Image (cartoon, rainbow, N blue to C red; front, side, top):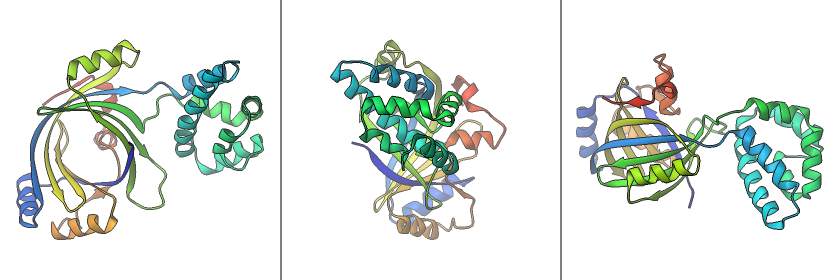
Length: 264
């Protein structure tokens, strides 16, 4: 089942000092993890759009239902990736109120509305890899997790909204082979060190990556709990961001997407 969390990062922390403070405020130490990570891009937006159009032209009811499921996922991504003015223009060209209204009309009308919006087609052609959504296979000591992670860039507050689908798997390399066999080829391999803590309903992680200063990540559904943690750890004056690790590397002029093997 998918879960939504609010997430922030506190940059450039002192690891030993922060661990000591976490223990003093009563956070539960979940241990240190040596992590190995494979990351994978999901199929391109334009490829999925073409696939959906092709399936909608079918007379097979099952394939049509499959295409509507694919369309629902794609529209969720596009609604977040496309700026609001462009979304309004697309909806005007399609004569609908919201982009997701496409899900409630006949397949013939969907195809017609696709053709009626030059703006939609131009934007979809430009959108290749969704930088905010990817597949992660991660081994943390003896635990192996397969995750689809979607970071939403549009938000009504300053705290990032993240949606995750996650499940445990039994074999790191065999799962990688399974994904590869169906055409989901890994982008890169990464290693990092993580110290994990739990405080109330918040997951607190101290992450140490190659070429980055250590940072602390707080994931929680409650903004009040996040604020409480920052205050108790005396981190309110530190730089606090709601961006992903790739963007942290970019701030150091490092394109981590071009590094196929990232190790200490």
